[in-house]
Length: 253
Image 1 (cartoon, helix red, strand yellow):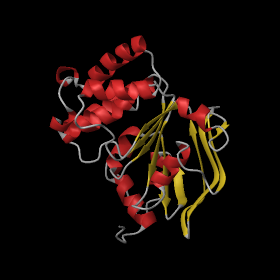
Image 2 (tube, rainbow, N blue to C red; image 1 turned 90 degrees about the vertical axis):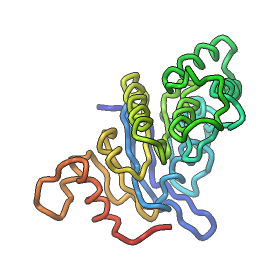
Image 3 (cartoon, rainbow, N blue to C red; image 1 turned 60 degrees about the vertical axis):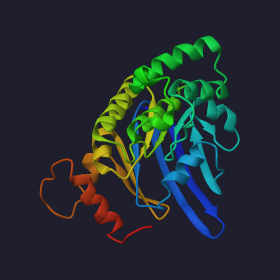
């Protein structure tokens, strides 16, 4: 039986009168990639922020490696790597300088930081551009740098919030390759995205969240079985049809 890295139990979050999360439950096994998908404003980023111990839940519990995110935030942050939806790099610093800056924030020693910087620049495909300011980089290069900054502390749990937003196909494939390498090393990954074909390609289990509630979850095959049409669905279109069926066609801002 697999052991959980993440557990959400009746997780609730209110921002004033807005109910961002309305009692969600899910678990992520150690070493798996778990996809969390939903329309804009569904509660995905709120969930990531709670698991990151950046935001306290209003009710319920969120556990990371058995530790409560509210009572043990510092113990949890040591285990985490977070790649936010917004690109969080300093544009006037080079790729190498960005990694060294964030590495010092993580408290890495000078010796271990040098090794990590070299390895992560190679992983990001940026070793030949390491001295250039990030403001000269393409969107895909910035995203790749953003990703490897989240790997500086060799996290056991990686939270990826829209990691391929607006990138070119080559950078997207490079990010996918990196994610699979991390999984092979035993890293647990929570993956949020609007690109459903990515979820089909990457994720072991998937949860669909809408208006603060988990409305369905399971493997891709289990979710595809919910389709109204009794015909075989070919990847990668199947999950998108189920998603629209469950969440509706109303536009979200």
